[in-house]
Length: 88
Length: 251
Image 1 (tube, each protein chain N blue to C red):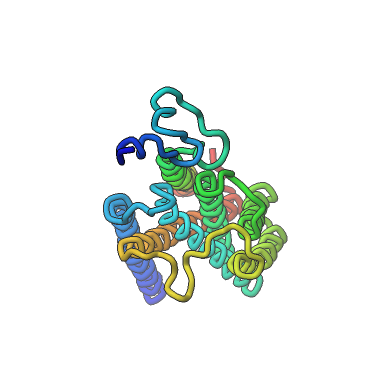
Image 2 (cartoon, one colour; image 1 turned 45 degrees about the vertical axis):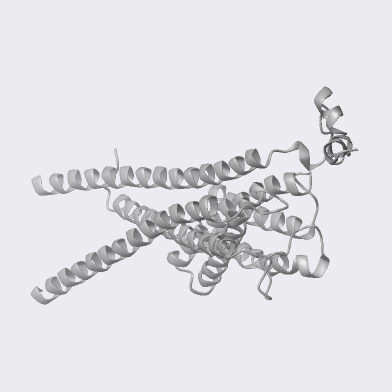
């Protein structure tokens, strides 16, 4: 038996069968961590990090905007009161 | 009269000067943080090698561990602010505690989710009741409780004191998270150890160090921004009360 034939007949990784099997059938992995794509999980993790950081920053930006609006309203009210007391 | 006016003017100038100096430092830290993010991402994805057994999913580690550290930073700031508020009772300490708790919640959620995504590949499950995972979840729930309490229970002195007590007691769980792996075992990896750790390539170590630097800067920026907003809000509400007492109403 040649080395090439031996390699073709040698069992592959666990659950993958021989080279002949692989050329004629496709079997799905059942259970375990092989169900998950590492690339997909990595992208999901980094996307989630960015989303949470952006939401946190956006919420602070919104609070700051609300605060600025309240300051403007108060300043306008104070100016009006000053003008009124100056007119009296 | 003239002296008091000059004094008042001098104080105003000094306050504006120190505020602008503070702004310069703040924006410098912000710029450093942005630069550190870009450099860290470059090192993680283009320099650090792919791990031989886990593959590319191991690169989650370079952010997951620094995020966990940032959660500790947020929680420690919350502890310091809470203890300071209980001792002194000033709004500055309270603002610090609140900012720290919010940072701890954001980072805690990130730790749990990034860890779960890594676990899906490494263990085949997103979650297991491992001692470190369980204690980390408990800590995040404590800080979620703090944030919810501050958001919905009003802003009175008793509510602030109650939250401060929670902030002090909540910190007791932090060393338990850290030592849980050593004391009770479990599945959680022990890559970072005092004996040099399990990162065998210098670029892996560099990526992790940069991750620590980036997330320390991010935690500082987030806490600082939140403290500034909180202090401004408390100053504004005091001014509003004063305006109302003077009969100046908002329309």
